[in-house]
Length: 462
Image (cartoon, rainbow, N blue to C red; front, top):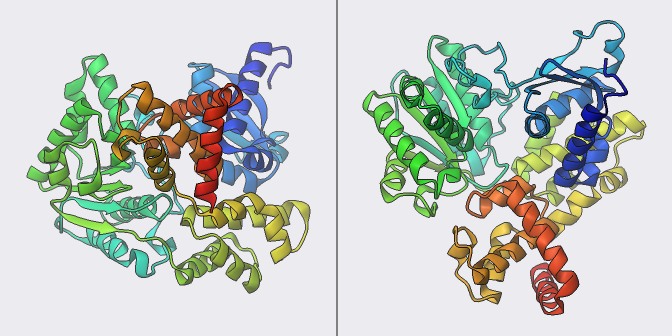
C-alpha cells in the first residue's frame, strides 16, 4: 500500500485531483471523483479505490481516460490505472479490480486495435460493452443512421464506403460505431477491426514519423477489414495527418475494406479539410443524426432505467425528457446522478429531488445556448469572420475575441473544456483553460472589455 511519507506521489495525486475538479466542475467532482482514494503507485501502476461498485463502474466509464492522461502528465512512468472497490481490498487486492489501462482489454481480442504490436494502448479506442445495437433506442431523429450502421455490420460485402455519421455531441454517433464493432466481432471474429479517435490516429502517425517507423504504421492501418475513425473534424487543419489519412482511405477503398467515420458536421461543412478529402468522405452514405425528440428522450430514459435496474416514477421520467433536450449523454448522465443520489443518500426519487440534484444541468438546459451561437454573436460584436473562430490566426484582433468566445462557452454552456476546444478548430483543452484565465485577468483590469462581455452575456441569455 501507499507509504504516507511518499510526498512526491501524494503531491502528484493532489495535482491530478485539482485538474479533475477544474475540468469537470464542482458537482461532478464531489459526486464521483472526490471519493477516489490513492492506495498504491509503483511499477507503473496507480491503484485507486472507491466505496461502491456503482461508483467504480461510473468512474471507469466516464473519467478513466482523463485520469490516465493526467497521471501520465505528472509521472510518465505511471501508464496503468486500476480501480478497486474499497471493501474488497482487505480480502485481496486483485478482487473486483478493473484495469483502466493504457492496454486494450483482453476481450474482445480483435477489436480496438489489438493487431498493433507496439504501444497498442496509446491509440486503441476502448469499446464500451454497453454500446450495442440492442441498447440503442431508435427514433425518427436517428433511424437512418441506425439502419445504415446495421447494414454495414451485417453485410457480407461493403454496402457503401465510407459510412459517414454526423451530428452534434452526445446524440449516439460513438454508440453506433461501437455497436458495429461488437456485431462484426460476433459474426466474423476473424476480421481485423480498428476503432479509434482521429486525435489518436494523428498521435500514432506523429509518433511513427518521429521514430522513423512509418512503414509499420501504414501496414497496420491498411491491412484491416474495418477501420472506424471517430471525430474526424479533429483532422481539420492538420495537413500532414490529413494526407496520410487520405492515402490510408484510398488504400482501404481499393481493397474493398469498410470504413466508418463520424464527425460533428457533414463533409461539406468541415472547414480546414482538403477538398479532395472532403470529396472522398462524401463518396458513400452520409447519415445525419438529428437532435432528439421528446418521444425519443422518453424511450431512452425508460430503457436506461431498465438497464440500471432502478425504479423511476413516470412523472420524473417525463420531467427529465421535457427539461434536458441538449443530448443523450446528458440525459443518461442525469438519470445516473439521480440513481446514485437515491442509492447513497437513501431518499426516494421525486421531481423535487431531481430538481435539487440536477440544478446545474437544468439551469444550463434552460438557457439552451450553443457554442455556435456564442461564436456567431462574438464574431459579430468584434467585427471578425466566423471562420476566424476556427482558424490558426494569432493576430490580437482575432485571438482576443476568440478567447472571449471560449470564456463565454465555459460560463454559459455545460460543455467540457475538450468539447469547447474541438469547436474552436480542434484546439486542446489547455488552450481553452488559458483563454478563460486570460479573460478573467483582463476583466479585472480592463473595464471596457468587462462591459463588452456583460453585454454579450445579456444578449445571449435573452
